[in-house]
Picture 1: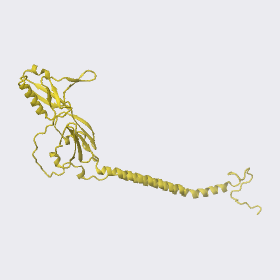
Picture 2 (picture 1 turned 90 degrees about the horizontal axis):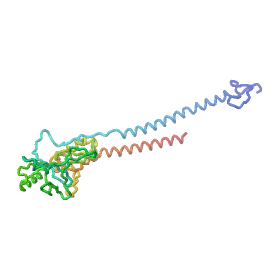
Picture 3 (picture 1 turned 30 degrees about the vertical axis):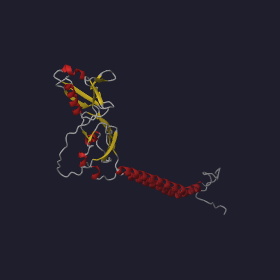
Picture 4 (picture 1 turned 120 degrees about the vertical axis):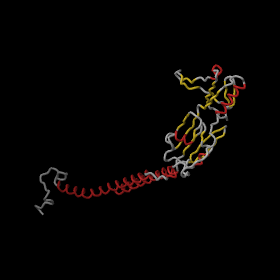
Length: 304
């Protein structure tokens, strides 16, 4: 055996440290390293592929939860039970009744302007002391009354604006104060609120006293695609709270006592069942995706 080297292709003589990486068997060490890399590289690539597949599957499950569900026209269209041209008799012109805490604009005119001077309404000033050019108005108190110059206290709640105007004119005439009095009454703080699945929820103050529920919803930017077309209206009148359901998909809403809204009404639009179910399904898909990813990564870690 003398004169035969174990690895003739890589023998190097006269090395200081024959057992070091750069010593007697550098080529042999390189040979073993190459074999190790040749074994580990495919294994590492398979592990990386498994991790990538697990991540992609989890992302796919999460993405599936975000896909929009189909929306049926019957769920979103208004007034669906009208076929072709339809004509119906409209009831007498609706007028809002005055309520407590209403602010009333009352103007009295006559051929003798000096007689109407006491009824001239002052203006509301801003914090800087300048006038906002907005009349102050007469507040309807907790007893439903207002206090007028010359006349004194008068019942207002429960009457329409035209009825109150007629009563004021009649009182001025009967008291022989202004025989030709012309009276105009308007509600100054007519407001309502729209909440829920609308594009612009909030409280709206308008001029006038004849607003339909469709006009109120229009003010709030209309219902969004997820809004339930069966809306809820909350109304308080004379210490009584009413909660009514109005189906915007039916023409019966035109004959509903809640078609014309009153001041301080609240319109609430609930989310549709589709939206609620979609969110619930999305939460489940996310949970499954994260659970699947965690289990897959745990199995891969144990196999390494």
